[in-house]
Amino acid sequence: MSASLPEDLELIEKHEQILEKRAELLEQMESRVEQLGILREQQAEASHAARRRNTSLLRDLKEIEDGLRVRKMPHPTVLALETRYWASVEESIPSWEHFLLGKGPHPTDPPDQAARRGEQKPSAANNQGLPPRPKRRSAR
View 1 (spheres, rainbow, N blue to C red):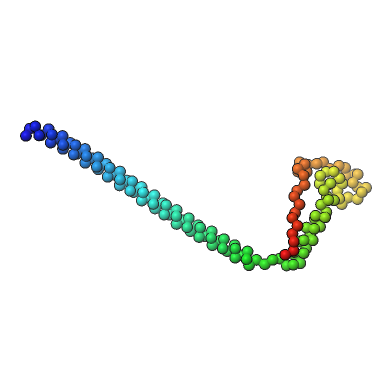
View 2: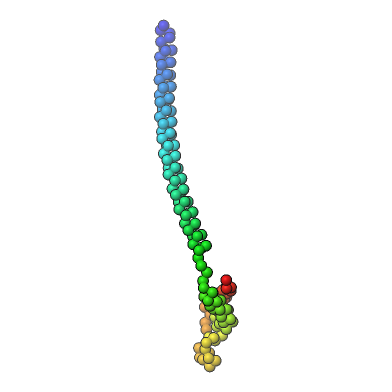
């Protein structure tokens, strides 16, 4: 029996090592399960927050769409005035073009005053050309 005693002690020692390793692995698994639970809770909270935000955005978009459908067109007189205004602006552009480019007198100056005013100094903005012309709007 003395020959089996060292073997028994060795087996007992291996058994204890196995139990220690098992306990360590169980602890790691429990820790991982807790981490996954926390992660799931965070993802669920983020999902609920995103759902609330999306619902709010959809509601806002619907209100905007409804407002655009209901919005009335301006009165025909206002549209006519606006159209005439832009036509007037487009007609007066050629008379202002030379002045704005620094190549001619102010369009409202009488001919004798243009000589006193002198040449206009071109600015950096004028070197880039004319601003875009407004688009003609039609009466609806």
